Amino acid sequence: MRGKRRAPRPPIPWRSPWTPVVCLAGALAVGTLVVVSFLVKDVVVVVDGRPVAVRSFAGTVHGVLGDAGVALGFGDVVRPAGQEEVSDGATIEVRRARPITLTLDGRTSRHLVTATNVGDALAELDIAPAAGRLSAPPDDAVPLSGMELTLYTRRKVYVVAGTTRLTSRTTARTVRQVLRQQRVALQRGYQVSPPLGSFPKDGTVITVTPPRSVQIRQAILRLNWRALAECEAHGNPQAYNAEGPYYGMYQFSLAMWQAVGGMGLPSTWPAEEQTYRAQLLYQQVEGRWQSQWPNCGATLFT
Picture (tube, rainbow, N blue to C red):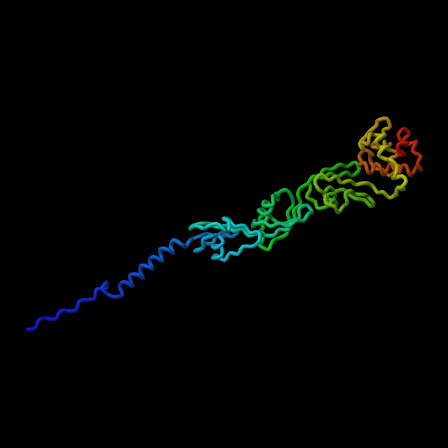
């Protein structure tokens, strides 16, 4: 009786001629994964405050930004610097430059800022927006294309109109606006210095004088009016002599001051107005100065 035939033994895998190849390929794959895991970096790129997660093999900041599709322009700020090496878990900050055309108290200049809103942009330019009148709210966004800003700071100016003396803290763009704010009415022919359309900077003295409808002859203008004022009142526009009473640089009596169109007291007007009225008086009396300035009139010819 024949015995039963034995079943063939299953092949042993490691005895296959392909076993070394498969093992090598597996080892290479595992090694590659290990190497890749050491080379790849997870980085956060923050562009104008917006974070984006980036996985990159790049070794420098510039390389990571290239992988993230972030192109840099003139004036952009990058932290860390573009040549710096990048480690896993690093954060790269990019702030894009924005052009600002700033008109500050009437003067225009151009700047590049990396701030994303108006308030931060002014802070970057070392300007306090609360100090005046701003053309845009501080929380308005500054677009990448840039924007125009106008700021008028709060200034202290003075108004002298006859006997009126006013102090104004203003953000006005022109002398005309200051006078309107102070309700100083301008009548026809009144003279204003500085001109109505000029910018009133801090400390400006705005004078409003009555009409000067009479032109002074050149020969009279060439006389030594400074010497006369020095002799009469030491050149002091606010001088006062109770004996007359006499007022101002040229010691006008009220009657003579009013005769040449003066308003209020001579001593309340600036030197320029007092000089004009003195010249007008000289012209009206045809040069006979002895009655008005008997002691000092001769200094006009020195």
